[in-house]
Image (cartoon, rainbow, N blue to C red; front, top):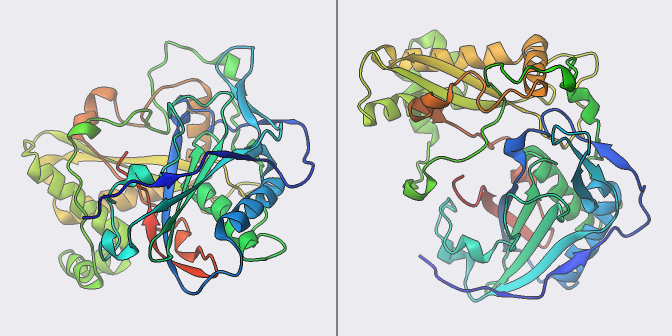
Length: 395
């Protein structure tokens, strides 16, 4: 496993390439959840195809400045409204974002094949954002570009989670890379449209005595003690899971449903949970285009649009078939307009931490995050091809 120390340049502030609107942008009910007030990161590895025509760092900074013309709220700063309730808005001040160029005396091959987490020395690829939970008045985007000895590049984008989810982060990064390759416009133009995820409930009307339920977890649990191991599910493994359950269910189940059901069952067995004990699984569904409203979310929407789904059973009834069935049922139940509206209302009322799971049930809850469809496999630098990436670290 490779060990190294990256040589970083001094952080630079990059502002929009041209004048952008000076205004205040409201966030959605989903964006405003307290648990999203933190920075999250996305790492991408690129292998050199050919010698770039221009200096890569210069091209990337210029593309970032141009991208901020389209995504100008990201060049602003978050602040809280004085009326109470800790509601956030974005001041579009064009103060800019942070770019860092770095070099590391290591080759891409030294990270292993295939490229899967945990990545070695991942902290060397990350910009120093300080306290990751301090977001008020801070830059909303940090980008570090690390050149490797083999000519490859590692890009890490760190952004405030109140502004974007994983799908939004990939959209922003794709815009930067599109422009860096010389395209006049990004392939997907951004859409703010946070009003599409508003609630019918007035925030001032919520009853603080109501039981706490919500849409997103606020804190990771026990990460210091977590052992990280990659498990790769090849087509043969997926086929084996399909053949282990009734044919009708196996043929209609997605790979996500099969893997999540199997992993949930294995977790219950590994923890030796009693037959009568209630066990839970929690995962997210993307609201982009999958549920019907008068106005669905547009293709360029880059805000938070993930909603929590949960399923539960007793440990004794959790066969592989039952686990896959419950995951499927949870997905079908949540992807309705009625359910999404109810979640928005619950969050707007100020209800707390986990949708459908009490806080004392967390030890029996298996939490799954799926970013396989966020689109990062289509990222391209032109002179360098993407060979892997995703979430740089657990939690």
